[in-house]
Length: 273
Image (cartoon, rainbow, N blue to C red; front, top):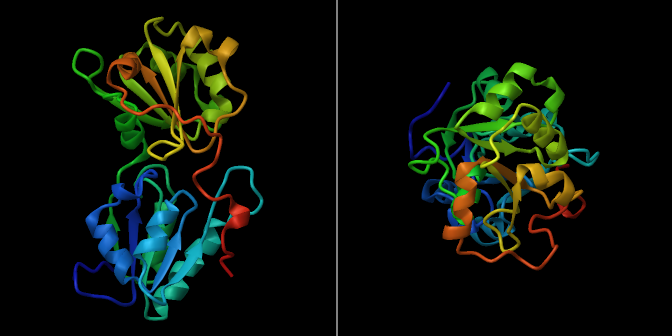
């Protein structure tokens, strides 16, 4: 049961992307709903400035942060229950996600829960982390003469990918963009090298893209194992392809000298109870 009535203000869930970090990258439509919402259920990777300055007086803000390997992460089941509970209590609920709601988020489970409970909803797209990171690093993902296509991938378990897929990824001219893959990056690079990826392709590992703590790390793939970091500040975006070299020409933002985290650790967020 979907509602397309723009003036409906209660008993509805808005699923919206807040952008990758820079608070000015939230869309006008998401911002309008943020100013109206009775309840805001927010991911960890949402700029704190968005919530500090754009919620209405008396709005309930519930942090439902997730972080890989962190036991304090809120379960998806609990998030689904919160959406239903608040919407059935005659509230306008804004479910605010980092980046875009349709790129590697759990929006499917939330949509299934809402439809199962006949709760009206609306989906508002946002600036996905890939386009934000690429733009702020001066890397056109499909620059003419460099790449005509781009692939968005996640690789938190690279061993699940078949050897046929690794061979295809190594030999394609597409730009490869990996979400949530920094912890297994050594394996990703090794798999691509084993399958003879072209030596003129480079890799950018972009930490905390579009925030004041953005850092772009450039690598020749065959040099990564010698120069690679043991850990990158989350969130990270990995871009592989010929377009990466354009960063040197079009970059306009200096790397931060800080190792601070822009997004609040889970232990600092308010509990969802």
